Image (tube, rainbow, N blue to C red; front, side, top):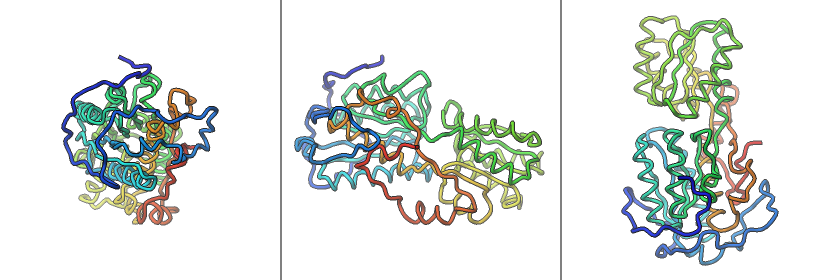
Length: 385
C-alpha cells in the first residue's frame, strides 16, 4: 500500500536490532516521540543553495537521540565500505552541531528479505527518530524499504535501485530522495575506453551484475550502446557473476579455455573486474588483455596505475551516503518538507569520475589517500550539474 502522508506515528514495541549501536557525542537521551518536522519550514526555498542553519533546529530535536543507518549488501566490497564511511563522516557533522545520535550498519548479506526486515526493526525501534541511506538489493524492494520507514515516521533516501513506476512521492514525506550515478553513461564510457584500448576490434567478454538490479541493467545498456559504434568488436561470452569476485573468476577461467584470444573484458563492477584479473593472471595474460570495471575499488585503481586495468568509474560512496543522510536529516529536523520539494530534488543523479592512466595519480591523492572534503550543511551540493 502506498502512503501519501503519514499523519501519526505507528506505536510499536521496541525491537532488538542485530548489530552494535554506537553512541556518539555526549550520552544519548532516551528516544522520545518528538514529532517529525517540528521545526519551521521556510517558504520559497532555494534548494540549490540551501544550507542547514543549526540555530533553526529546535533544541528538543538536538536533545533527541536520532538513529542513523546505512543499509548495504555486504562489507566485503570496498565500494560498500566507502558508503559506511560516508555515514561516519556525516556523523562527525552531527557532532559539530550538537545532535545526539546512534549509528548502525544494516548488512543484508545480499538477501532481499533480510534487508527489508532490518529496516523494519530499525525503524520500529527509533519510533520516527530515524534517518537511513539504503541501497536496495534489487529494484523491487525499494518501496518496501520506504514503507518500513514511513510506517513509523522515519526518513529514508535510496540509491541505485527502484522500479520505474515507483517514486519518493508515493511515500510522502518519508521517502525523501532517490539518487544514482548515470549508469548508462558510465557503462558506455568504460566500454568505449576498452574498445579503444583494443584498437577498435577483437573479442570481448561481458560480465554483468545481479539480474533485476537497476545499476547492472543500465550499465549493460551503456555497453550495448557503445558496441553499436564499434562494428568490429565481437562479444564472445556474456553472463552474470552477481557482483562477486569468485563467480567472475570462474566465468573467465571457463571462457578462456575456448577463447584464449580475447582482447578485452568489460565488467559491470570492480569486484568482478578483480575476479577477471585473477583469471588472466593464471594464464599469464594480466596486462595483455584490457579490463574495465566500475566503483573505483582501491585494488582496481592501483591496477589502473600499474597498467593492468584500462578504466574504472568512481561513484563516490562517501558522497552518496553522507549527503543522502544530510538531506534526510534536514527533513527530520523540520528544515525542509520533502512533499513540497521539486521533482528534480527528489530524484537526481550524483557525479562520477572516470579513472584512467592520465588522472589516476590525482584521483588517488584525493579519494584513496584521504577522504574527500564534504560540506554536509550544503545538502544538495551532491547533485550533479
